[in-house]
Image (cartoon, rainbow over all chains, first blue to last red; front, side, top):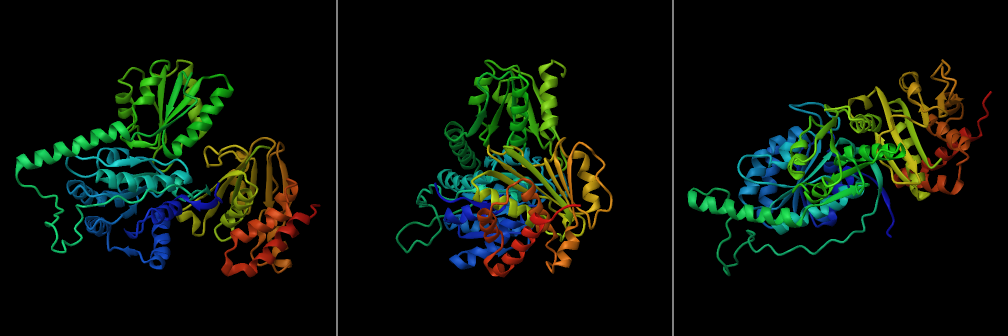
Length: 354
Length: 180
């Protein structure tokens, strides 16, 4: 195994992006993700890449659009209010079938909100973010190692399916340091015959555009896109199951909430309560398989979130509403502690809540 | 102890995050599982700075230390805020230069180190943080010369390599400090 280094989650994203061949970063500073931009500012000029602090988030996402059109790996990063500003650009990227990596290190909202960790952009991310019928692939890392690995994965999926991938992290994941190994497999980049790289008078023009004024044609584009989404839903779901096999009560959590939940599962098990955890790693596509298995033996789900329960809908859909889904949450920059989650498990185990 | 949950707290500028990073690197070198989580945002600028460090033989779950096994309190607001959070049987290290009161609890082990005074008496600038960490390592019987040296080399950038000796001196001073 390679040597492990200590890195902040934000730095791990930046380094992994560079390892994945990303040489173009555009962003605008915002807490708690600024280390990504700082890392890029330091590294990119040394390796012939481009770091550019744009005049706004809107400018940055449109620079991403430009580089992506030219077929290069490109990314931007921000935090919640900044990602809202990028919403229009995200929709245009989707409408033009352009790959890109977007990082959202979430903070409490709505509005300008606070700067402490949050997961309250779940709806915004998993339902697209901007206008129109589209999805992004949403990846939710739960360790610094995953911040790095899912960044690489995000680029690969984006290129394969010609769409945006989003790393949906939070302030804790961005700021914490853990040992990380950067020695992972990176596949060679795939060809992008659609890219606008100049015809050299040898081929027809490639056109990248999201404008389509003929309804019949625009309808077909949407149908085609959703065929691709169906393929992703079939092939690309990722999740972790923790002590689920015999569990009566199954927590559902991602990111920092999943780490807190693991402690709570262990505490419950120590007292003889059969608890488990499903940790979705892809939030879109949302993994159905572990839920279909869980409803065969479990009695209830508890969605543990740093939001007002935005994931509950997906848990209910994935489990076909066969079990009750309870909520254990803190919001606004607060984080549930393991004791609070454990208390909720006990309450449900004793049949207390409804 | 297979898992140590450590909370370091003080004013911004006292080197709280740095001291935490040193402990994290020491854990890394000793092949432990670990996490380091700083407080971030406005509170760093002049207010309280704190840092959660978890060193464990098993994978770390939540990186947030809300019930520390070990508390390093570098100022009074930190002791006021976190004294009650320390687990029963836990250990509190207090900078007694800056904290005049005693710890009120009687179910924890307490070490008072006049770290800020020791630092200025020994021309160690603002290394009160490392004096306390030195004491922590000696109390835990964990002052391993090799990993301490290696951790210092990691946590101090090459540009500031000349600071390694004074940091080691501060750690040693703390480790050898005898309480009254």
